[in-house]
Length: 222
Image (cartoon, rainbow, N blue to C red):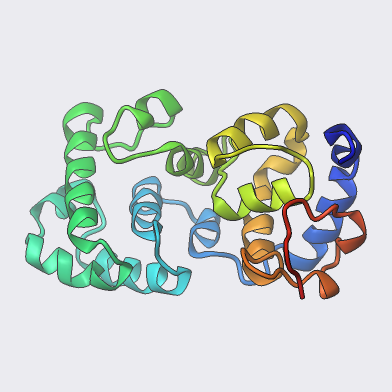
């Protein structure tokens, strides 16, 4: 295997190509919410999106926000009704508990306003690094890298990083990825990871960056 630095030299070319192919083409619900961001709605949608398909997240978020779109309304909504609304997102009982506890903390500790710094966001039980970064980047326009499993997988296959977890990938990319790419990185790489560089048998034959990819740990491709 070549030195990682050799593949990191490809970063500008790869992002330029993928940006033309995937930028604003079928963006995820969370990415679309950046155009008119409401920090609380974005936070709730992000918590609902965990282990759920994007189209499901969008549908249940819209339904929920018709009834409860503030921390107080989330707390006041009947738990059984909340569970019914978010049922299709999976793990609905746990998610309902998280939505209520997060909303309670936001009211009691932050006067009803979603914090705009990472330390305070992570201090709220139920909010992890990816969720915090999405809120900070998408709602507050701060320079953070939201790294999910797609971003983690693709970055490793491209040889940019050699990491075991999304958090390790985030920490490494923060050091090597020019900040001018941070704002659109998640939107582009999530779409690329869902449509082309899929977890099993990626579509390397039709991949627009096939010639720049060492295909690290790719056992079988199409």
